Image 1: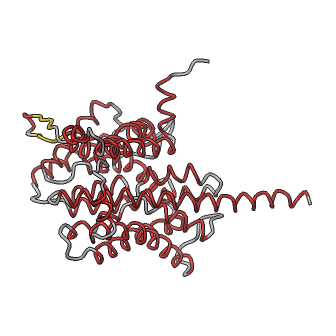
Image 2: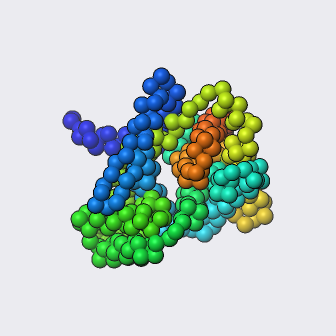
Image 3: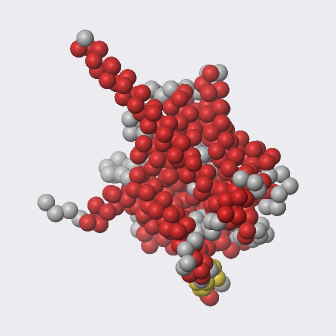
Length: 404
């Protein structure tokens, strides 16, 4: 039987393993390209300006990807967050307690460590926010590839944790990187959001309504000097997630199904391609482990995220504030906490925003994020494979017991 090639490609791109693999391939291409004899062509491409004179938009190609295409990624993240808050794990206070508490620990602890280690270093007045975010796509891809044998509740915990984590990172982006606020344009952006909500309330479905609203909201936030990717989050959070009677699926589910392949297959890989191009040489490697800025990021991600997520989760469970996910032991949760130290997409974005006035420091910061995320993915994979063997042995023992 013939299948629709486009539908098959979309289905393939929706799998977390494929999305994570494309992200890694794009990052590897960027690293190889910028450190090859053709490295100058990479820098030239990144700095190529694309201008829209009537709108007074003059951005480099890298900025268009960072500010434009990445808004689609944040739109999908907003849809996921809205679904989790209304009908998912975060809708039940008891089930939501642990990932929310863990996310808070996973944001506060790395921020404190990074600020303490990098105190006084140029750019650390906002650079402490670099290690606070967990990369949803990357972390879930590693879990899908190496944690297939551990209970399904592991994915629910990690997804809920990463969604709340990214929400807090988005709030930090809005607070830290908003300068010279233009209130007229902010009002225009809020009007677009109100229009989006009204259209959802009236059950209007035409893309001729939503696409102009989304584009103008993005432009208004850009002109208001607020990071325009927040338009994606706002539209996602204002989208309806409960289907009406007789409706096959709600708009949030339908749009997530449609935009997730675009985000995973195009937007995030392109962002990785333009963000991960860091010149790597002996000097950079030496600075990674001696420079206080890079040490602040490495320790914030690897130590801060792991201890913050696991430590506060352990404390919440032991004190009875929250319940441990079904069939997960503390060692399983520690392995998942290590995956929380994968801070790729949002961390790279924050590094560019926080250190835009210090280009050399920004390159070093991005190298620290890349190295630490890779180390966390390898360590987390090893722990998950080990825990998978333990769970498989337990299931085999349980299966043999009735026979005996």
